[in-house]
Amino acid sequence: MILPPLRYLRPGSVGDAVHWLTHIDGAIVLAGGQTLVNALKLDLVAPTALVDIHRLDELRSIAVSPDRTLTIGAATTYAALAASTDVRLTAPSVASMAAGLVDRQVRNRGTIGGNVCLNDPTNNFPPLLVALGARFTVLGPEGTRTIDADDFFVGTMTTALGNGELLVSIEIPPLPRGARLVHRHLQVGADSWAMARAVVRIDDDNGVVVASRVVVGAVLGSPQRLRLVERALVGLPTGGDLDGAAAEAFDRESIETVGDVHCSADYRRQMSKVQLRRALRDLAKGTPS
Amino acid sequence: MTQPQDEMLPISVTVDGRLETGQVSSRTLLVHWLRDDLDKRGPKIGCDTGNCGACTIRWDGLLVKSCMVLAAQADDTRVETAASLAHDDGSLNDLQACFKEHHGLQCGYCTSGMLMTATDLLESGEEITEHSVRRGLKGNICRCTGYENIVRAVRAAAGHDVEKPHGAAEEVAS
Ligand SMILES: Cc1cc2nc3c(=O)[nH]c(=O)nc-3n(C[C@H](O)[C@H](O)[C@H](O)COP(=O)(O)OP(=O)(O)OC[C@H]3O[C@@H](n4cnc5c(N)ncnc54)[C@H](O)[C@@H]3O)c2cc1C
Ligand code: FES
Ligand code: FES
Image (cartoon, rainbow over all chains, first blue to last red):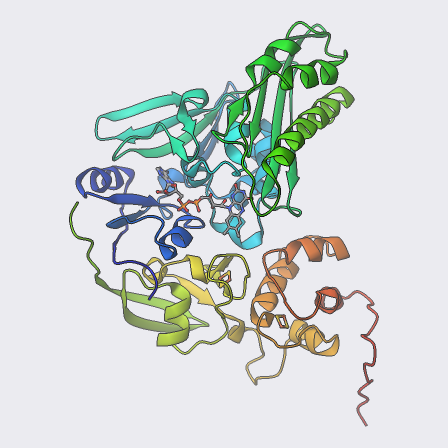
C-alpha cells in the first residue's frame, strides 16, 4: 500500500462535492487522477480525503448555445473532447489539443478541469484557454462565480480557486469573425511533454490585425501572455511581416524559464520564440487551428 | 488539520466476467487489488508513475492504467485484464497468436499491457497503419523488443501482409 492514509468519498451531486470540500478539512478533488494519484504516491500532497467527481454526469456535459458558446463540464475527459462533434466544430483547437495529449490510456481518464486546476507549466490546456478567452465557472461555499482565463491562472501550479471551491465548467466564447488561432509545441516526443509551447490568435478585420493574444507555456508562471508581442502585432496588415515584428518584440519580453532533464533554461526560451514564429508563419499560410 | 484516517470500503467489481467482492482500504490502488487480492497477474507494475502501461486494463470498456485508479473507485464497474483475451479453451486469440508468430515479445513483462492497448486500437475502427499503431501504443513501453516486431504483430492481426521476423520457422500442419 503506497498511498498515505486518506478517506475516499464519492459525492452524488456537485452540491455534495462542494459540501465535503468545504466541511472536511484537507479534502481535495480527485478528477482523472492522472497527476493526483502519482503525486500521492510520492507524498507530494497530503490531503485528508479525496472527493471523486469522475462519475458526476453534471460535470461531463458538452453543450453549444445558440451564439456558439461552448460549455464543457470540468470532468470531461480528453477522449470525450476529441470525439465530440460539437467541440470539433465550435472549437477545433480544443479537440485537436485533446486528441494529441499523452496516450490512449491517459486520454480516457485525464480531464480538462484537472488539467487547468493543476496548471502545471507544461500542461497543454492553460495557454490555449487563455488565447481562446475562456471563462471558468466555479462553485464554492459562497455560491457560483465566473473567472476570466487571465485571472484564473495566477502562477506556476496555482489558480484563483479558493478553499472548498470546485471548478464546474469552462465556457469558450466563439472566436470573432476573421479570427484565427494556431498552437505550436516542441515536445519530447509525439504527444509528449512540451519543452516549449506557443499559442497565437489574431483577430482580423479587413486585412488588419485588430486584436491578438500571444501565450506561451512551459515557462515560469505559465501560461504567460506576451503583451509586448501582442501590441506589436495590432495594426499590422494580416498578410504583413507578423513574424518579424513578433520576433523583435519577443526579445523585449521578460520570460523566465528553468532547465530540466530535457533541456536547459536558455534552450527552452529560444524554443519558445521558435514556436511563436512558426505559429505566426502557420497563420500567414492560413493553416487552420 | 484533522488526522487523516484510513477506511475499509466494500467493493464489488466484475473482473474478466466474474463478480468479485472484497473489502479494500481507501488507499489501495486497483492494480494492487487485482494482483494481490484476486491473483489476477495480467496487469503488471512497471513504473508506478503512469508512464509504462504495463498495468493497462479496460475499465467499463475504457483503456486505462490501473496504477492510477483507486480500487474503491472501481466499485460497481467492470474490469477486463489480459486474461480475458484468450479463447475459453485457453487457446490464443488472433492478436496473441500474431505476437507469438512475429516475436512480439521477449521477457514478456510489457506484453499483457501491449495486448490490451492493441486490442483497444484494433477494435476502435481507426485505420491501422505503421504510424497509427506506433502512435496507438505510445502509452506502453517495452525495454526489450525495440517495438518493431510488436508493430508487425499488431498489423498482422489487422490483416496486413507482414514480413516474418528473421529466422522465423514455418510451422506446417501435417
Ligand atoms: C505519463 C503522463 C504524461 C502526461 N503528460 C502530460 C502532458 O504532456 N501534458 C499535459 O497537459 N498533461 C500531461 N499529463 C497530466 C494529465 O494530463 C493529467 O490528467 C492532468 O494534468 C490532470 O488532470 P486529471 O483529470 O487527471 O486531474 P487530477 O490528477 O485528478 O487532479 C489534478 C489537480 O487538480 C485538482 N482538480 C481536478 N479537477 C478539479 C475541479 N473540477 N475543481 C477543482 N480542483 C480540481 C485536483 O484536486 C488536483 O490537485 C500526463 C500524465 C501522465 C500520467
Ligand atoms: S505501472 Fe502503471 S503505467 Fe507503469
Ligand atoms: S518484452 Fe520485455 S519489456 Fe517488452
